[in-house]
Length: 519
Image 1: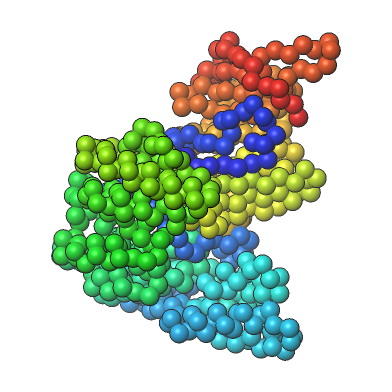
Image 2: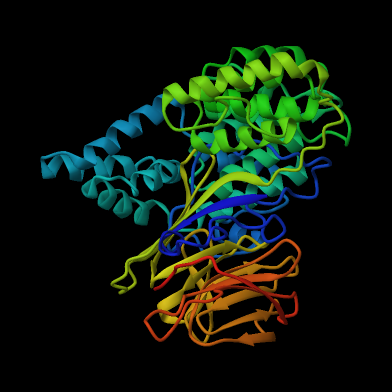
């Protein structure tokens, strides 16, 4: 897969076109599905909650430690479900707590104070809404949400909830699916949302029949619940099994085709198309093009290009509503002309794009004002790293940790998705780019060298250069390409400024000029 990385250096380095894209074998851009799933298709990534940075209660804990701190037993299924129920608000209470949180920004101080006290009475059930409110553009709402969080979240509830969900999958207590699907819209972090979706897939079928709570969720008022039910009833079957749960399939198909929420409909159609390989779901997805967010459009465009080879006339996915409508019509025309000849069952889908956008924001003044933000396919924030100094690159490692290149600090820092710094590695001098290797090692491109570390940060090899490297990238064949600044001035004629190293850091003697490019 690939994830798009937008950064200031990408704009500064005119000749380098490699920086925005990460190679497929370098990282795992979404949480890896647990071993309990027998089939792992590339599905449309979910919308929903996202991890909030900097909450001290969201620390790295094992499942056992998290459950212990919450006073929960990993073997008591009834207790675990009761814990999740306590954190679940009814639709009426969700509306009520939303109204209370809106009063955090009231003009009258006493009203703001009263609203803060009222929301605290909801206890742990208020954590999810409060975490979203803590990111409000209204500074008063955000401030009061953080104050309330400190009072209602005495233990690491996010970690405990995710651990409880994973334990429920193992124990399979009666009523688990109903509790999980009810809790999903209240999940207070992306990791908890993903844990619920994985659990629903794992628990979707019992004795070959669909779980009634999932079938009921097909008509739920919440598109988040409907979307999760669609995917859970489709995925997770045996390899090559095109319809996992036959008794629910007609109702499932009808619900997805009638879905009015574009995000939920896309998620359902995407899974239906790639699992069942029924042809009718392709034009149904194409019809959605003008309504989809950019992340979804990128995913769909890649699928269509892998099928067609190139864009039909007017088939490029540009930004304006008019161009998107033209693209929809162009691809529907292509499908009408070529669809009957395309063998969708035998088509092997090898995605390169996950629909995830990582944005690197650099403040040239330094002072720790830089940040890195990751957006999902729905363009909602998944995680954020703040307080970094002149970031120039970011990569997500197979274990889910985030590595940020802080160029002016000459370090590469390691973070979790809650915005907690886990450690750092020193680079001499001024690292610019990194590539994560499949074995956990790392290729580092710095101003005066290119080097490889093993997974523990021990140097394997280094290629040294004058202080003129501007950016670099590891290629799919293992070679490393790097770009330097062009010599400037009357006594410094220009020359090659793009060079290749082999996989072990040896100079391949291959070079060309891609400039002009200077710092």
